[in-house]
Image (cartoon, rainbow, N blue to C red; front, side, top):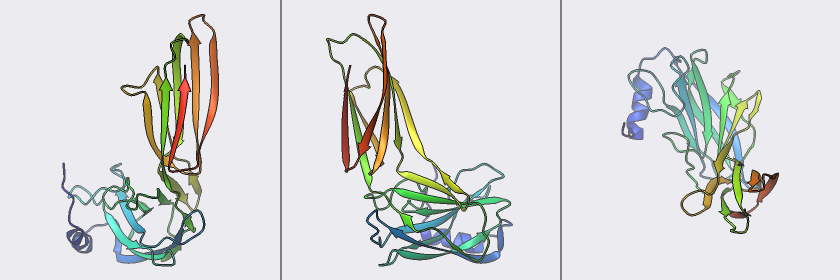
Length: 240
């Protein structure tokens, strides 16, 4: 496993490497404002630009390697007004994809730096000018969903169920529109070992619990239940 390269070495690497995917070592800027759901500005929120080589299919947020140029190409953070102007290297978009990651860790963009909030990622369809103004961005607060499956002895049957919930990473294409990001887990019977499923999600979202219960008589009971997530920890218990 590769060790994380210290940031100062990463900057030096990005500055000195000769690579056709960077347009003459030129710079571009991304401007945006970050608020919470009460429209209050959020300061000290990390924002970075990351690059991937689409010719190799390597995912975003990979540190530089000699096989290709996949790297952070710009970093910044919001001020007391929740605003940031992020200066980035300018990639050749015919060869690469660029993403602006808000509140994601520098290495992979998959974990929140400020763990009270989720992550927002803008994948750029194009760069029309030297300064790209991204939409005002609202970070949702993080939440945990706990779903307990309770085996009731009086009910004999088999259970199939799924849970669909919002991930902590909200992903948008810019400027063409949103990519909805959610996870679905599917199980049969009781989850081991405790009977409780713990999922990382976001507040002010709704999870969907769908089940099909086949009773010993052969009868089948199916339903879909909405679970509102309006606080830091939401709990739901299903008995069968």
